[in-house]
Length: 332
Image (cartoon, rainbow, N blue to C red; front, side, top):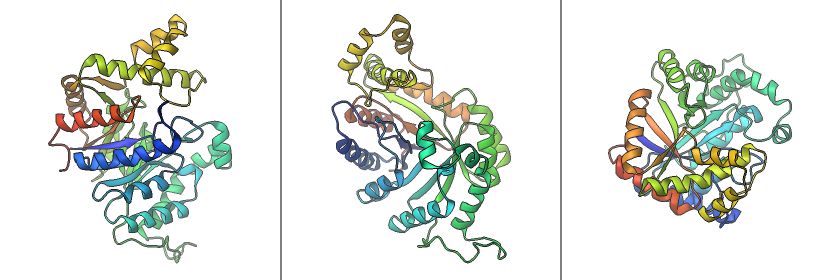
């Protein structure tokens, strides 16, 4: 078992785009020093508070500032792109950062319907072609097109000495089956859909011979239970407003969150105060209890941890506390 990080590159109200992008590299450096195994950057579009439309660019920036931690995209949304270009990009990154590059693949739109339309023609049709796109991409990565294939002589140059590890991300048995079919590792998005996690991961393990199975979990750890819940309340304000199509454009500070809460109706305030069951929120003792249970239940090889909080220092402190809870899970 190992601990890794998924970063969606959030922006707080006291930050700017430029500062938030720099902070993701600062967090990656800190994660490497704490002994985390991987640092992945997500892909999102048309979301003001999440600054990650081009994870491959951020990975080059982060890679230049780190030395040993594995880097990757979680995930490149393949329906938007041609497999050849994705293979070229990640082969380039694998050359720049030898033995450190991961390529996670996803099939979600990653943003609004308008963003999907701007990125790709007929997104639904592109999703229907996901199987073929993954097959073509893996042929480029593995360099094993049949001789009769029209791309058999085409290389996704520059070819790295060690090709990137490829993962499928998802929350359904369909994504697990796709990962198994193409001999990919699998990451279940527990933070997105916790209720099917056991079923989907079991389906993957039953179909895959030697693939690794991870779970991406949402965790916010603080010195006390009360402080963790206060921090998470800010995140919930941002999340609930986003779901109501009233985006703030940033994650509010604790004081801003309290002000916004006071302007809301009783039902919305109750929804925010109740929190969300998919995020593990608490002090070290509580977080350890929940994660221990989840590790036993899901039987995964690795936890990838997603943490949202009002400020970088809150996120970093949460990751530091996690590394103290599980010193045996980090790869020092």
